[in-house]
Amino acid sequence: MDSQIISVKEKIGYGMGDAASHIVFDNVMLYMMFFYTDIFGIPAGFVGTMFLLARALDAISDPCMGLLADRTRSRWGKFRPWIIFGALPFGIVCVLAYSTPDLSLSGKMLYAAVTYTLLTLLYTVVNIPYCALGGVITNDPQQRISLQSWRFVLATAGGMLSTVLMMPLVRLIGGEDKIVGFQGGIAVLSVVAFMMLAFCFFTTKERIQAPPSTTAMREDLRDIWQNDQWRIVGMLTILNILAVCVRGGAMMYYVTWIMGDAAIFTAFLTTYCVGNLIGSAMAKPLTDWKCKVTIFWWTNAALTVLSIAMFFIPIQASITMFAFIFVIGVLHQLVTPIQWVMMSDTVDYGEWCNGKRLTGISFAGTLFVLKLGLALGGALIGWALAGGGYNAAAQSQNSTTISIIIALFTLVPAACYLLSAIIAKRYYALKTPFLKSIMAQLARGEHRSQQRFGDVSTREELL
Image (cartoon, rainbow, N blue to C red):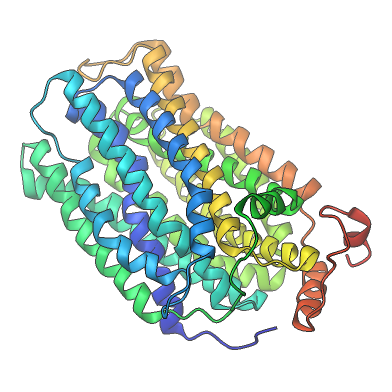
């Protein structure tokens, strides 16, 4: 096992990569539905369908990107080149996606579909190699937790920078003209994201060297699918992103139409993001104290209870709602770095089982299911609002729309957290003792290639 201590500078550099991604990712999740319906002026039902189709297409591209990254050979490594060379096109297309050309309704719909699809594809080009990079910086379990904790503290800060500053930038740049404001605001944030990705490239190093892949892509895909622990983490990933996507996408509507004061949105979002920062920072000390799997499922259970409780909070109780969203922010971001470490662990588990280290395709597969979650979440919001008769130009919404917005913000995330807790408790096997045994065997060049993936007896003898 590589016991090298990773420097704080490198941890910050690695975290900057995800901060850049979250500048775009969180902005899209929170504002793009609202931008399309209320600024660009296209129907919510179309936007929901567009999100589903574009993200599903993008999800299909993820395994291809992972396979390509695994087969990359350069003087900068397998994954880092994609980060630096994809950064500029990513930023440019982000600005185009938030632009509002003067077109007919059908022209606007076509423009939105093309630019949004390009944005999701370029996100794949940058983010899949970035996620895989964390698995080759170190293979020490505690260093991985530390690396991922730094990553998600900075990712949360990047998301907070983007989402909290977006509306002030819109007002500063565009004044009353939100069309100019949204385009200018995202342009500023895209420049910041580009600089962060460049910093990530120059401060990180790939240390875990795997031999170039010589097997067929079909065989790699088969090996990943046969990894039962990868499938479990994939299910947890899709549930996690569904929860945050649906709640995040509904937040602007919830604050505007349920809490009744759009002016408090920035304060409400800031409260949630501050909770996220604290949660990310708590991951390392808590997992030093207790097994990360135990922390993971208990936290999801608590999130279930809190999300259901929010459904019953009186609409007028805004202070109570602020308190709830703060605690939910802490707990949600506490489990996120743990979940990404769990994915790195499934790569080690796969190597132990069959002698093949498939870092790129493993993380590509994870982003595949993550984007399926994004697709389903975005479509669910658009379809639900359209089905409830949402009217962006109305002074008030009908009772069906109000009920749908409340359910999207509370009950849908609760269901996702409940399923995550059950799956992690019942099916995830890579707890600390078993994982330490795997890492020790890999350090000696040993593996269990003769064992089938998912052989429960093999795991239980080491638990």
